[in-house]
Image 1 (cartoon, rainbow, N blue to C red):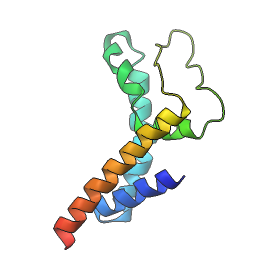
Image 2: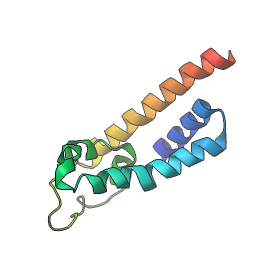
Image 3: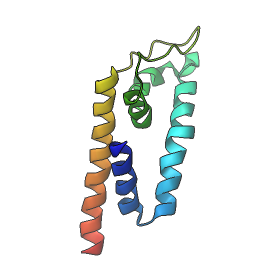
Length: 111
């Protein structure tokens, strides 16, 4: 949960406001990441399969799971997802990148 808070804080600094940060923090995991995962199941877009394991909010959600990642159904490609703590590391790296870029822009714009 602390990583989600840090991402929200970083997005608030990055966009200089809460509304746009809320839009990104809800839009990205609920629509964009699910769309990428769904599109990767189309045979013509199978080049998206390796990208799915690096989706940051999906990895953050995987950090909260108590069991192994679920099955995506018959015919779904093998996404070769990271284990729980590896997924948490990807989400922590994403949070660090957001915070670093937000802090850099904050110092440049508002200092």
